[in-house]
Length: 286
Image (cartoon, one colour):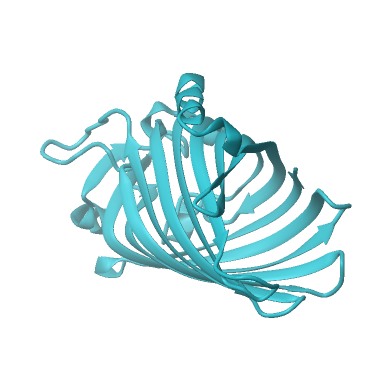
């Protein structure tokens, strides 16, 4: 992975190098439906500690800022340790203002790829995401953006348990559209919110369930939640996500953030489920 980053950096003009960047985040997270299940008896709840760090190099490319980065992520759960994982990845982000002045719109793009390793091998795999964002600041306090994205995940191994049906329920893809906005009350306190819609594959883990079995495109045992849980891949699902939060600046480079995200997933066959994620994060950006 280091070699790949070095090759990309070497391909850019030396004169374009601007500076190193570093981002880090530590979050305490509570998810009230980790299993993405419909029935109360199958819903799993847990807390986790999530960590993220990214080291990048900034360049000036096409009149915009290009940041190439290497990134590491990890999560450790209180009770369901099979969900513990670590991920290493590379990414590139480009952003350019389309004019001069405070209220000039901006265009941004991001691409990332990660290799993920879980305590339960059925979840091991690779993940990628692409996004394109158009945004604008509407004054000194308020800004908004619209983002279109594509996400993809490939489960590393096939854990087939049913003849003739794929054993890769964690191989997923989807497309999403998100509207985000933030409002600064003063120099330290910022409120943010977003609404997003995603259409594509989802995975739901439940005890043996004939209804979801009949609708599934892939099935495998999911021992992360217990020996009697099965992971089912559902295609063509729609998820609406709503996020609200506050950010409190701790100086010029760090902030303390708190957020709530409500997910509402609707799948064919009436296999709908809801979930909420609550988080408190310490964020550092340099």
